[in-house]
Image 1: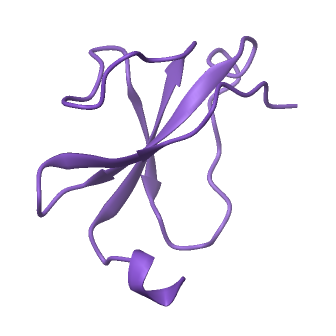
Image 2: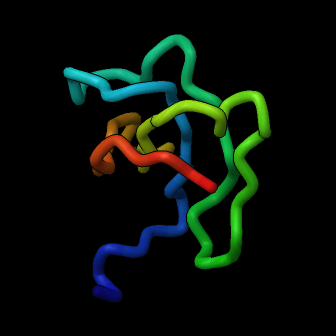
Length: 72
């Protein structure tokens, strides 16, 4: 929904599932701003299942976490 989109959302990728929602994992890789355009996951990180994380820079918190996925 339109109310979900915020100008400060960042997208991160992390290997495997994460079990907490308080802070970004140390191995999280910044993919870019959540703008609706394609984001590239570096090849070395896309070889195994991982999780996408939406992070609000203004609020300093995780907004949402995907289920573990394998990118192709």
